Length: 493
Ligand SMILES: Cc1cc2nc3c(=O)[nH]c(=O)nc-3n(C[C@H](O)[C@H](O)[C@H](O)COP(=O)(O)OP(=O)(O)OC[C@H]3O[C@@H](n4cnc5c(N)ncnc54)[C@H](O)[C@@H]3O)c2cc1C
Image (cartoon, rainbow, N blue to C red; front, side, top):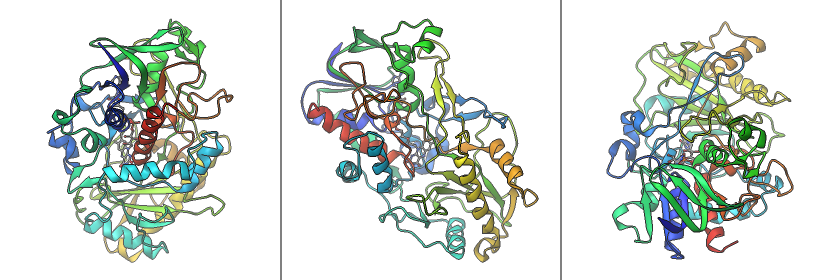
């Protein structure tokens, strides 16, 4: 089988690149997705039916235990057309401009605020966003409590700033606006030169020297005359590169993989938004969420030397267990939680190979709170101090809110740091494992036109190329990257 463009991974980014290349009519396009189709499946498409999703549409990865914490963290990744955009919480924010100033300073020329804005606009022209979604009584009380603590009520059409507000959601009614839904459905209406192959796993890239010629898949070889575009996400794009012979030479040797290109940055610099919960028990039953369990947010800008809020808190109407072992912090009745996330965390983890086969689950080493300056821990502890004040407000007091974890008896910074290390988690925002940057930087995997350094006919387009973390949830930015990638490919840049 052959095509002009082969796109590996039909997630948030891949679905967009496929559609844009097909619309530009420059040749045949194949979009490969290991999972099944999401079309006509209410559990995938309806945000309020998230709980009905099963393990069938989940890769089932575990992250390695963290230092100082016994828990093995489930590291959720969707295995379905539409990718994580189909099992996420649909919070849809535009990052502050300063994030892209940082990208450009990092060597991502053309990805500064002016370079990315037209592509955010393009995404917004395709995706409906509910800017004032319905809010449950409990979440409304949380917003009032934040206001009592001096935070303004935000409308997120404005710039990201300190305040409280409901998350804008990429939904139409209650239907997700994932990239599969917005760019590909109905699949029967796609142009004939775009073929979507679901249930097809990419196993390893095929090469002629350093030129990528296609991919071996679970349904045989597929050759790509022009380009292969890797969109398998921040965990599996580096994994697939490594099993194909592109990555840190010593690591590939360990697994008996023949080296095609020594690329030290592949799988390194894993960024995320680490968090830890402040858990409250309420005097009476918690409202069910209107569309989602995570309706409201609080952004804290406590250190004014930082360019934008450094803490993004999620207010959740239920505790979702994320661990396979460890503390049972989820036993409280009528519990809600506020999780401060470090918005631009500096700790870096790694994705490594557990074996030479793409089906061997990779090693995900998050390495949270490991940055040498201690910035991440300092920042989350500052967030904790603020969130713990919520019980003192009339709005939260009116709900009979009592802090159950870490618990009022836990007061010293050392005890709190220990609690954070034991309970830290994530909202699953891996990025940066094939990061974009200057060609001469040894950690760079792709240069600013998203071409892989040292190889021909291959680009990467997903969250793995982020040169630095963005301050808010990733999906909108991933979709922006895909829109810009499509332009770069079409214009043969
Ligand atoms: C539980 C959860 C909640 C989240 N909540 C939010 C939120 O509310 N708001 C927000 O903005 N962001 C959220 N995110 C993050 C956001 O959804 C992701 O960052 C984004 O979707 C990543 O897009 P991507 O294209 O990089 O990867 P993905 O969307 O993960 O796409 C990768 C695709 O590649 C496929 N694939 C992988 N390996 C292979 C292979 N070998 N062969 C073929 N196909 C393969 C996968 O099955 C997948 O479909 C959440 C993420 C999770 C997991």
